[in-house]
Image 1 (cartoon, rainbow, N blue to C red):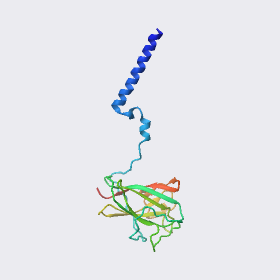
Image 2 (image 1 turned 180 degrees about the vertical axis):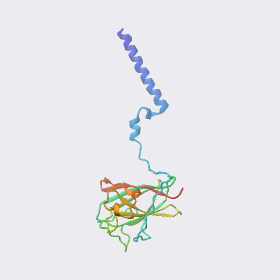
Image 3 (image 1 turned 90 degrees about the vertical axis):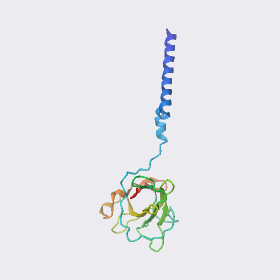
Image 4 (image 1 turned 45 degrees about the horizontal axis):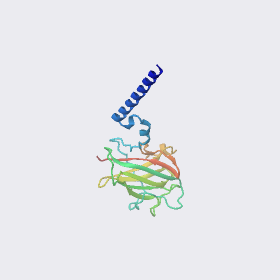
Length: 204
């Protein structure tokens, strides 16, 4: 009797293993390893179709002819380091490769360099439509909340001029140019702060 029960137990285990094998063959390894699948997923570049990045005035401190560079940080420059990464999309959420981005901003004390090109620079999105900006947190100056200016342009298309703002800045609500759609959510990083922002241009 005991031997018969043991044989039935072995048979049931074999059938269970066979069922698991058949499911994995039919649906793939993710059917039996959902946690492993979740671990290898990478964050997707978010874009909401039709939601275009709003424009904001250029302001009085723009200078054309900035140097091409992804890092605006210079040796000995004071301020909290900030790295912003993101993508440039069309309003149908197609990546815009080779888009031009021109950044300029005040330094940590709220002062613009109008004589040279300190904290000014342009770059182009890479083959994945991605950009990376290394800079410092801008300081405030009378009448304005801290912000970073940027012009973005797809090849041979109109220029978007806008500004990026910082979540939690006390002056946001009193700044007439502030737009909540342009907020950067800051995160702590090894060298300072990090944030992401995707620009969406008015083109198909």
